[in-house]
Image 1 (cartoon, helix red, strand yellow):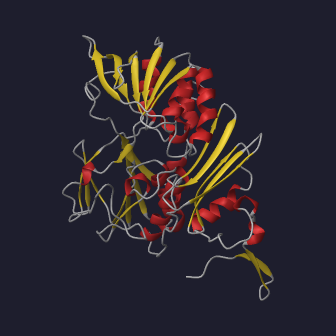
Image 2 (cartoon, helix red, strand yellow; image 1 turned 120 degrees about the vertical axis):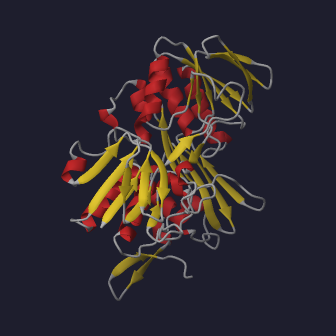
Length: 411
């Protein structure tokens, strides 16, 4: 059996490793535009100069040789021919397969702002090559404008501030990291970043830019009229699944590749995992999807069920925060808050079920909260505050096996 994997990040590498464990003698090929395996979660350490490119590799140096995996690195996929079971590369080569996994990830998105898509000094931060370009641009620079204050934008700001560059951060929302944090949890991070050399422009939008004769943006103007001089720009305004090469393949796509609960596409011998499948966009989930897809490619039927939403842990300047679920309260939701000198906790309950929780400072007992959000466990009937709950409230004794088991709601 010939297994072909497009992409060498969390989902693709995990899938390749899993297939080799399950099928010792099958042929495995990985195709990637990347020339080095690297963790996206560690790009800011490379950008700050604390780690080399080799230092953010998450597999052993002999991973491909040891697992007998052919790696076609630095190769981009042009198109997929599902009728002939062939993947066509930009270089003109064709790679046949019996089973295909699409794990091509996502690309950063540059909004259609004046000069942003044409300028030479506007960068996204998605993979190692992006970080290398930004690192080069930072040499000799003093000022950077970062559009977007999500985790990627804050990672870039953190790294660039360590290199002595002043960062102006433009955010459409009224607080930083709006997908993960509420106003209370965002405030201490804004203060910490401000002390490090960042200036924030919240509830603002970039509206225009000035470009020099060399094609570089030298200033950005905001809708309020404020003008921000800069040496280069980093855009952290979201990503789009990398699906352009699937046009004409017959594989169904919308915003992302459409998959069933087994991560199979509408084509019988094609699966998708990671950001390209548009399920959840975090590293551990991508790895789990890669493993699940691989097992199904090897002939089992293993559903992927971890679709409960976002899980993000951040630690900037010694302040740790865990955000679970979707941080969007709706009318009728109950918002429960508990604050102390060392921690801040907020939970959103919808019909007695926890849909989102923020734990800042003290993130102990995080596994319990993950179970509540992931499995949508009802808690509204319990006669205590949600922040006084523990595993003991949800475990029941099984006398037949002599074990305590997690008591999930019956369907």
